[in-house]
Length: 257
Image (cartoon, rainbow, N blue to C red):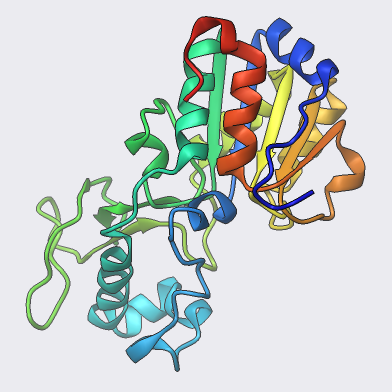
């Protein structure tokens, strides 16, 4: 099937979605890539090309040179400035309007799901549009501009503010992970979209859902390690497959975007 050809949606999947009370989705970098958002490693261009992102996105790197790490994230935010939600993002927002209960879990940090209208998004890796206290006092704010020689300071305790994202060497936010695991445990259908599902603990969510009786669906242009273990595989980009899935399942409502 051509990468942009509208896929045939299995009748069994349509019936399952229509009957489902609880639908969940897990999205990865492939969804954002369709909006022109470079993946974590693909973003290393220009001045930053000589640096390993795994050596920048760590608490130890921030401790050594907070302004350097801050500037890298400021540059990454600039890369997102022109990005807009694609049809895949909008289709997920539409599923949220149709399914009796819908939980959207994302590994992306760009906020494009919220921009498309999705609510209650579970952000496993945080959000690059926010900052938080590096000392852990609990302060979370919208992105702030840095001074010439250092990142901005926490208004509550004076420590440096840092991007509100999960770095290497860090655990996922406990509340977000617990919400994601709860969604996997109790969903009737789980859509796994634009992710290879190889990085744990997020990679465990499809297996948890399947073990609990959910219908797991993979939506991805390429085969992954998960492909052999799901009920349905829909090959193609999210921006093509998801609108087709919504149209086939809920077209009678007139809301397919």
